[in-house]
Amino acid sequence: MVVELMSSRDRTRAEELIKLSGLRFEKNYETLAGVFANGDLVATAARERNILKMFAVRDDFQGGSILGELVTELVRSGYNAGHQSFFVFTPPRNVPSFQSLNFTPLINHHMVSLLEYGNGLANYLDKHRHLVHKGTNGAVVVNCNPFTLGHLYLIEEAAKRVDHLYIFVVREDRSIFPFDTRYKLVTEGVQHLRNVSVLDSSEYAVSGVTFPSYFLKTDDDAQTLQIELDLILFAKHIAPAFNICKRFIGTEPYCRTTRLYSEAMHHVLAPFGLETIQLQRKQHDDGVISAFRVREALRREAFETVRRLVPTTTFDYLRSREARGIMDNLRTHQRRH
Image (cartoon, rainbow, N blue to C red; front, side, top):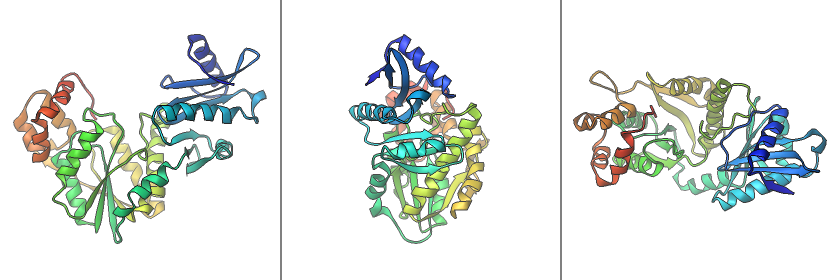
């Protein structure tokens, strides 16, 4: 019988079992489940939002029904929390076990496989089928925290080079500006462009925040792998569905993570027939336009500087009553993204 592990003692037991299995224990989870036999914890796993992780089953209990029981309990708790589909990142050797439990492989990498439980990806693609265009199509994937003239320049230049441009706004809410606001500002900022579509990335931009690294030895491995998985997921599933053959990105002088991502795009996407096109970032005064510069100016209430860095639609929002909560948060929040 699967039970939720709630006491500190049970949590310690789970951590020990996970480490004995050669994995790392991650403190971020919403549900930690386990199976006991004769008073001993013999299996455990956890759920963080819609990510199932830290599966560990004692050697003498493997090959039975315990893995399925853990998955069933975690999926049940996930459904109760409002999630409709679930992901598991696991070493390739474990793929058959999860396939037998109705998980569908999305990515097979030599270090890790990504599988999905439910029809999330199929439903996402079907929902946007009406936006599919023939011809030479391109894509940009943006966070826009907030939407700046730099983002607009990248999108306008990319749109000139393709028949249709898809703008995927990252849903993951790890920014000062929440997803709904970022999506709204992008949509309003590009409404003058006739050959673009703005889409929610949904669950299909692999976030460094939710990517579990419990099966990896170092955090550096995790960052590199997360970038590669994100790009492979895009190339294998998203790009073919929208007839995308070009991926656009701006140069990155500040953020190391974004720069690593840019560098990886060239060698990861090419085998899938996708061309990476890097465009020079738009300059203003003494440097490139960036969302970081905008946020710094907002913290100083330097609105004339902000006005020169963002489209009118973004500036009008920033000066509205609707943005007051975000402005308050900016005064105490210090992150580059």
